[in-house]
Length: 407
Image (cartoon, rainbow, N blue to C red):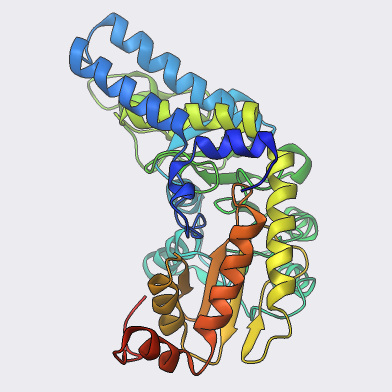
């Protein structure tokens, strides 16, 4: 355990980390105590005093406003530029389906995008005839090549560019500037998937000049599942139409179906959502901003992940795919199948995952881990990736295990 008193205090709010072996925050992170307490307290209040009436509405508005303000602070935006969503995928769909697509238009993305950004474009291709340009990219290639290839794929018929700030595949941090510049030069809209950056990478959407930036609450921000947010630059309000509309979307409405949308980005919110989850999201954001600190979390995460990357680089039978400029996602390819390595890691008490389509193993190192825990991870990974690991498994258990189990 680290002697750092700040780390000790923060880790106390993440009891699942103390249980050991959890390295999958890129999927869903540890729930922090402030978020858990806010969820429980809000649910208890609703249970005891109800969810209707002026007082309940005032509480709902205050909680949602608190979450929006904290997201805005996290991203360097204004509160009225933020809509609450259920996850990053919600935000990516709002943008993809809200743009005015015309015959001959194309959308540009990469072959290493998460499903939340890629699949809405697949729907546009199949239903609207949009040309989908997926830039070739193989994890392990020089990182500087990806923004160059993306920029080269953009032309005057490009309506939308979808890209991740941090790749969920290998943890590489994408240089967004040349891609955004090229997109705007051609009049294209840029939607950034920030699921793997929010909470672990300082983000200033104004400096990036991104048109939209979508985030999740349950990953590196240590909040509840079913929470997220969408930032939309003010210039995007006239370009992104409402696709799903409900009472939460409108300022006024008439019985004949006419309505006036909310004047800000909250027009993309649709209806009732779980207030306990939003309260937990707001609490997690507050904890991250006030107690953890994004800059501290980013540096510590990158430093620990780099220690692990260096420990694994050059080892026989294992190729590190994570580039020099990275966050906490550490991805390796092994001679043994990725599913087998993940299963062996689970047997050793470590939670990691495979990445579909790449036969690689991803471990997520966070600021909340200790150096000893990261060293134990790399040691276990080297053991699990060894071709003779099956024999070692059998020797330790007395029973041979087949190499066919799933992740």
